[in-house]
Image 1 (cartoon, rainbow, N blue to C red):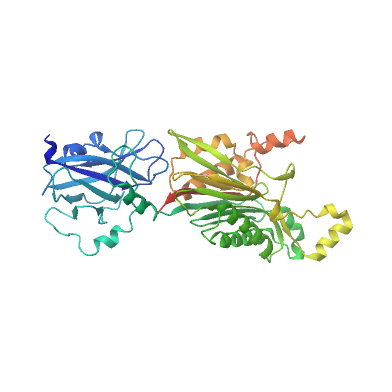
Image 2: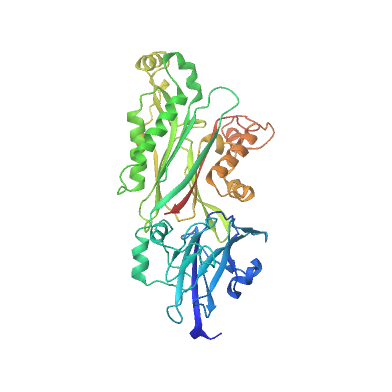
Length: 437
């Protein structure tokens, strides 16, 4: 190939539909794109800080004026190929000089979108059915900003890259799922946002005080809503301070009577210093999972905060008349007052592509921590709602098995108690990918 006639094309594809071990490729009508053979595709690269952005480069000889058709594919770890649906993508290569590089930005499965290009125009067909007009720049602005690749083929100068990175905002792609126990009300609750998460586990035994207006389910629901409102606060706050403030707001502003644990997590707004801050009161909690050289690993986890076995720290708000009655009957120790100030605080560095899980003790009492990464790999899901549902259903199945070994039965033995098999309970799991927009 005569390098003086080479036109280089740099692809940037946003794709979050991959599983661990999968790759994203570009297949098309040139040798550099495999001539429509997926086994010879241009394989794109990503890493934890850049996911779900995949980058790669190829060369086209004598590209000026050529019409190039192509598509994105996902190459599964098993070797199976998933083609994006829809018509072929078409590029009309407009040569403006030799040895030039053109940047193509696109999203997997969105073939109808006008790609974000540099020195290229995108056509819907070789006959020119639709050419980019004045709307092209506005559509392009919705794409993920360019992040300089780390494979030695930087296409933009440092100042250009930094300018666009400054516009990148970290977000949480999150969803949750709750499975109530087979008896009584479900007292679990959760809240998800693009910058914060919260879960609460209402104390079921408070049902004995229902005639006094105590409702643990309503109390837990109000706690997570109040915490969620606070988590949407000032972006300039440290995430750990925002999580702590969410706990305080939940404690002070609730109007419902009940008792509940609470865990709140906040994501920082600075892509250059990416942290989550967390506050946890009780035996609900969180963990952070990361792809480390192709293996999903737990890199951080909260600890349970308990007064003694099976007696977690918890918020409690009850009528004064009920409190006075309990004190008269059993003394001051009958009423345990835990506060936001008792919560454990965490500040944990995270990366784009990390998976954050929040959960109530119905999950951790029935699933060992060490099993979680393998379960997620086995499920093969990417969407957070599917991950949360699958984990909750797995825990629920274990909770109803009288012969299985679970963390709760093991902890009971250490405390001198016997509790064979799973522990029936409300189960909540929230799954959230750390992403960027």
